[in-house]
Length: 266
Image (cartoon, rainbow, N blue to C red; front, side, top):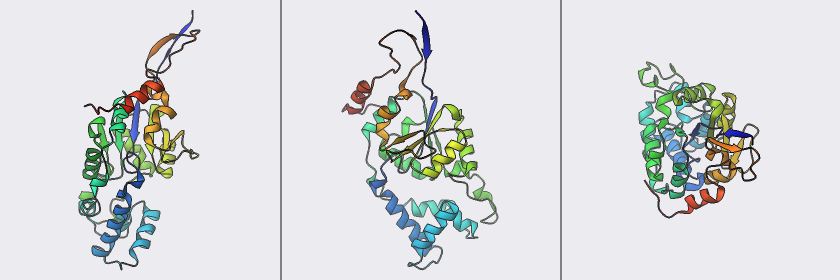
């Protein structure tokens, strides 16, 4: 009887953080937007009535207000900026997520965070979710912008962030992954498109409908087992003619059982 060996097509999983690992409805995003507008008023001298439009335009043109302000010549220290806009966030809005923790623990592949946020924010958010120890590496603002603190003028080194291809290449290199065998999860369509350009397999989070560049779409991250069950395939030799071909190490029912367990585990 003929036999063949099967395995998961994925060696690594890379996750965005904000609005991907926790819901965009948490209130954190709205609080962040207000903090950025307050920064524009208090630290940069913009009128309060102008701040929302300035924030939108900077984000649209440069990818973030910090990147735009520095490009325009404002001598903004990244640590001061992040301390202001992230340090004031109501982190208690991010609730522990035992179901997500169990899902991540059931995945044997490497798991990595890739966020535009600073490391302090990433640590706090992951700690609040109760999943920080599920990831082997955090790629963040500091990883992509090591030279900003050495600059003599604010526009000497442009701020590097997703969805720039430079940022995506840094992420792939620092993660030390083969993009062809790596799933990249992000809630931003532009980030997903950039991931596809550098060869990653892509997952759009927060939508049930795939974008053009997304290989998969997840309305919520914990639907992963139902939408991408091949993550759980293990190296296994099976009989090609076996009517009970077991391609996945956990069946969907077994995975659901893991996710619904009451014990969080360690």
